[in-house]
Length: 396
Image 1 (cartoon, one colour):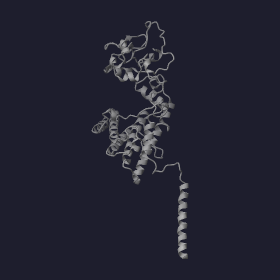
Image 2: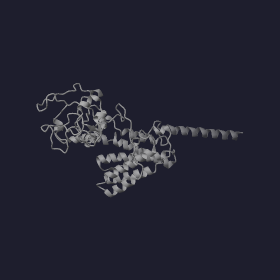
Image 3: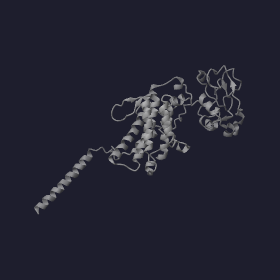
């Protein structure tokens, strides 16, 4: 009897000690830190994609003053197209709060997905999330390399990375896109809780594959002059796959008002977004829909004939540019125009749009060379290209 009691007591004591040790170990675990089992790959992907949409701080400096102006879609006197740059803007964009942070998140997604697969802790969609993360990482790396040149290929691995040449970066990206897109299983169906973590395609893997193949085409074309053989091979291979061919396959994310990453990049009212000569010629020089079919009848008196260029002001606008309408001012609205033009750029004097905030919408032109009563209202003109008159001559 005593022997039975001793054994029972020993087992009870061991059980208490085991439980105590387990609880003691739990004390050493950070209750706020997520373990590998708890971390979800889709959270990292979502954070990276959302962040890349740019909050107004970095959008103004990178999207507007750098990219938009460099592509001649807009004119800003304080931008790169005006010979002005700011190293602080570049450092902001490159730094951990923005591009480096987005890359850190998506590399974490890749690493967590690979760890889960290696340990067997997978869900039916884990492999697909890994491929999506690789595809999105390829885009971010292409954006960074296109802006700054050589970048590390194996970054965010816990060691100091070495930069790779732009050629090596592009070769790596093309291979990543090829391999990742081929490993997507488009038959996988995700639960709604996972779908909502993809703000672009809701994890429609067929669309992610189209996006990857279309990106391969773009990267291949960028190699066409420097490495034509590689460009041809990659382009032809990508062209055999599924591509973005319809609007509903476009990579797009809904914007919203406010001051966060989903705020529109063109939402700051102090960025006037002046129409460039290049974009104006694209809007009006490639055909389109008549202005009469797009606008309210009140604009009919201002619509010009199809063969009308405008009034020539040789003393005000330099003719020494490659703009085919250099020195001409279109004192009205073009006969035909791309319909997106009137959406992106407001017709001067059209206060019904409700987008003006100036206290004095009219500024007199004090110049005897202009006709009496001259007005800049109800016309569609760009700033002169590559000429100082773009800054010194103002018509409103």
